[in-house]
Amino acid sequence: MRRLVQLATTGLLLVASTMAMAELKVSEAKLRLLPGNLPAAGYFTLTNTGNQPVVLTGAQSPAFAQVMMHRSSLENGMASMQHVAQVEVAAGATLKFAPGGYHLMLMQRQRELALGDQVEANLLFTDGQSLPVTFIAVPPGAD
Ligand SMILES: [Cu+2]
Image (cartoon, rainbow, N blue to C red; front, side, top):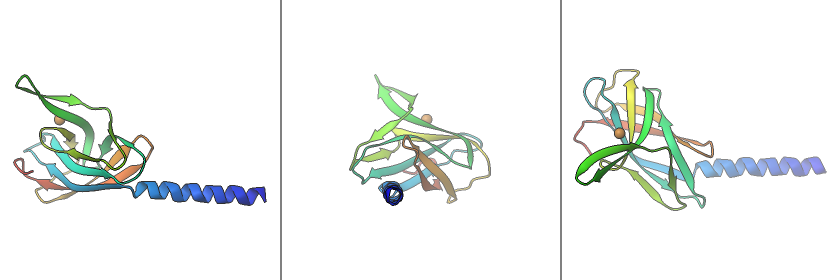
């Protein structure tokens, strides 16, 4: 009897974690390509439709050796860029990675990339979940 209860509890936990994964949505994932082996910039919109906050810690992509999370800012008229270790997205909130603010900086291409290519990546979170995203390669001036 005790064993049955344990199995039922484990089952519920599995269902709960599967549901948690479905509560993050990414849209408008674009990768701005620069010429040669310059870093590419990754932009996207992340929505947390769940009822728990999530904390984004970065991303990984097989197409790049290193992916960093940065935030651009303007201080006293000077543009600068800081490394960001993590960003919290509150329940129900939408976080935008966009020009002039948060962006992914993707370095050291592992393969040739052309405009229009689809580039797979995973967004990583502190709770261990990993959200697959397909970025579309766009030219430098594109939104
Ligand atoms: Cu940057």
